[in-house]
Length: 328
Image 1: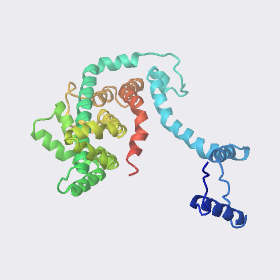
Image 2: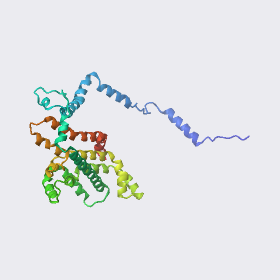
Image 3: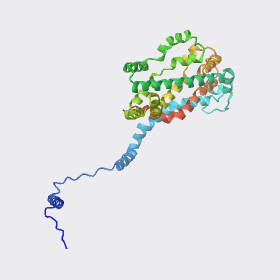
Image 4: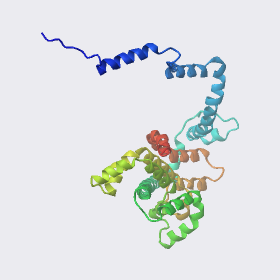
């Protein structure tokens, strides 16, 4: 029978012996001991408990919740008063001892608005100008921002600087040149005359450009290697990834188009072409300064309700859209 003899100089055993000897000679003073890390969960619980401790609860309420409640009252209370007053007869509104809730609710104010203003026509005009104007404006903002980020456009930094300057210019500055241009083109008392001057949006272009700059270049380059052109890259990759920011731009644009008053009033005097805010302004001319305030409240409600519905549908995109391009 053959015996397997282990060499005395086996490198594996020698290494093991050396390790054992090194371990035996190590002292507690020579071996560093890692201090235990505090648990994040426990620290979070302690911070939460400390914030709501009896001594800090008052400070938390005063510093956090009180300003929110105050802002909520300032914003919501006038809107609530407007809606409630639209269902009140005029004597209840102008009485010296006003009541918050209507004593004799009525829809007569809304019926009066429908009789005195071509409500269906002006509502349709607002829907057309808002939908067409907002769609074209968002489309131009998306394509312009894409060109400024992903295409080697000559002088694109100068173009972007011009967009930033346009953000600082009040719209009223360009009101007279726009009026002369639209009048020269025969656009007075037309829907396209209302839409055309507002098709450019410096805010939307700026916001989308900042968002597009945060997108990974590798994603765009991979699509380019697959043979995708600029059009396919834009609508297959950039737009879906940037959906929250685009929704934010769309919401701001829709609200601005719907509430626009000064420009449509400036170029229209035909009730059949007026938008809803301008058409309801006829109530002030009919009723006068001391007219039926309930009728004016009803007209204001008709202007605000569609915007609130759109805002409620898109509000979850607002915060995400405004902060999506904040970090590169």
